[in-house]
Length: 339
Image (cartoon, rainbow, N blue to C red):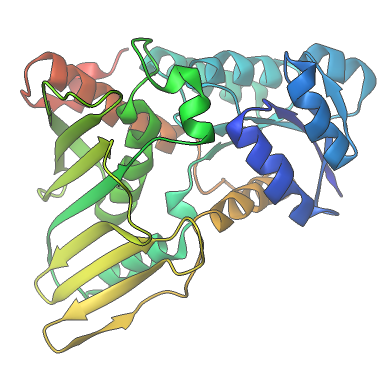
């Protein structure tokens, strides 16, 4: 059965999905409609897919048979769009971060429970072979006891991402923590388990327009401590070591490649190193996310990243923002959870 999908949003991520991902899934998934309030944006994407452009989901559903929606809207629109789709009886794939408040996350979980439909979250890192291989190496004891871990996401916001005006500025969904924080939180949680508290500090008095630098110290339920560094404004390198897990028997480095296909996990000891995963491109994960979602719909299996996982990632970002507001004081995750 071919899954008939409405693609919601013709911005940067919607364009990537329409141009690079869905054409590779022909026969498995068909984009029947592209929904964007600006037809001049949605029209060309729809034409390239042999689909029809609409300005609303309601308009698409009046004319097309749709099984599911792929939501690629700005962060603050995720919750309302997800709940609307579920009320129409549609399965959902929704971009990260899941939402910008925990109340919205909880509302999405409740709506999915009522509808009994599949909701997957388009969070890339748990789909990367390098992340899965690192988790397996830790579970098997290859790395020894995990002592600490760190992640780094440092680059300059440019191109289509800089043209997305809501990513920067003073609006509540702007900034690198909302844009990248759930990404690396999902990676670190996949490696080291659940986070219990966060302390955050940021560089101050930066003169460069749009620059941000934020450091998180994460306490994990296991007792392990880790760090995440986020920065907009510094040049990226071609191959970035985005995470390192340090154990008593060696270390694992996760290298992410956005432009080519050389990302992998590598285990190192003083005597040498060996690869733990096959090479991959970060953008291959978008295809894997859709395939996983489609399989979950067809089989009833849980998606690799569901609402509970994505909510846990949002909790860490909310706690980090609260820590910044408190001058860097640690914030336990239970403090930001609401009944």
